[in-house]
Length: 368
Image (cartoon, rainbow, N blue to C red):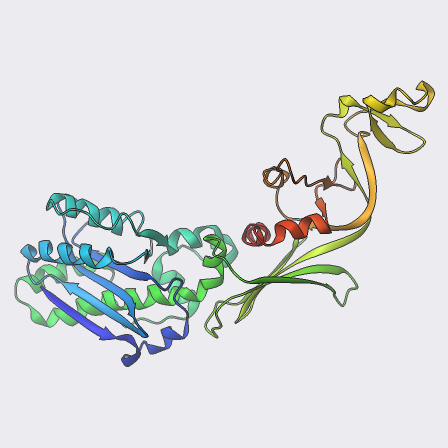
């Protein structure tokens, strides 16, 4: 077995390091196998990217013969167990289960289950329609980012080349290594989606907010989350009736419409209320007894409300999601223009209490 190690900053891929690693204590991984059957097929090549102090390394483990797989697995198992996070592309479905199955086959005690899995494929799935790409294959996503490969082969095509290499064709070694090397560099380059991954995994970000008036004279509440700066981020703007999302080179911005005026809060237990037509609001039955019957009527779903003039945020979260935030000590009232109103509003002071912990959820709701 051979172990090939390179310092990435000394290679032609040094530019990828201008993107921040999603986590510091992590290892990026991609495997090459001779097939999809975990019981019959072997892992013949593993690529890793990891950081030691200030240096990022690419390390590749290549089996020169089939019997090398035991050593490869033993070493990889020990190496990966040192990290808190394992970063991969669809590795949750393929790479990690394959490694664990092969470890079990060789009766090597598996050490990697304690690592947290960070699957960039799963993290990009919700954004597929938004990104407008045909599929989520690694090469397709790389093309979206402008990442270029020299390797013309697919993983499946390399299987026959590996068998030829094992039989003595040493000239095929650079081809095998190049494919995995470009997979690894492409995987790291997906950190161009760092802001989207931050939302998906709800990574903590410093957030501030302010109110501003746009050129169209409409007010908005602007939430701004700081992210590590990089000119290689996939930047964009996205506008919906619920708000505006923009990714810049150093921050993620979410702007939500502000409405100032009178809205209605509807009572779900409307049968416990009476409607006062003159005053145009509902009161609870416990106090309705003090009102003459000529000035009150049983409330319905459409009349069991109280009106309030205030400043509101049009919230992109569903009512079900908002109600989950309710606690015995914190009640968040929902407002609407009327019963058939599709938009849900929250008083701005109430909204500010949930804006920080729910920044990712709010932003994702606008993007999706």
